[in-house]
Image (cartoon, rainbow, N blue to C red):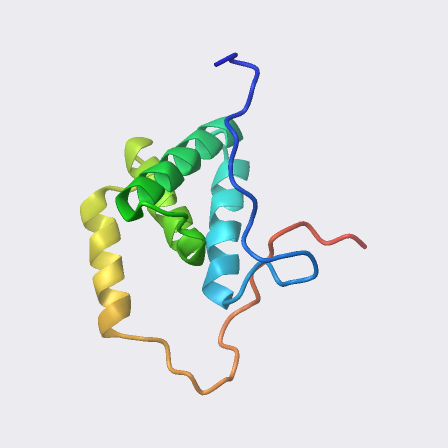
Length: 123
C-alpha cells in the first residue's frame, strides 16, 4: 500500500436520511475517538488502520458483514489502540467496564451531564 493512501473503511451504518447514531453510546464512541485523536494520542491514519483491521476481523469471525455491530467494533478497535499506545492498560479498561455493568446509570430521563460534543460549535 502506498504510504500516502488511507486504508478504506466501510460506510457508516444507516442509509441516506437515516441517523448515523441509533443510540447515545454510539455518539459517545465516535466522540471519544475524535477527542483522543485531537489530543494527539494517536493519528487519524493509525485510527483508520486499527478500525479497518477490527472490521475485517469481525467480518471474518462472523463470515458476513457485521454492520449491526458497527459501533461495538468501533469500541473494540478503540480499546486495542489505546492499550497499544499505553494510554490505558487492559486491566483498567476491564475494571471500568465491570463497574459500569454492576452500577448502571439510572434511567430516570433527567440529564445528569452535559451532552457529548462531536464537533466544535459554530457561532
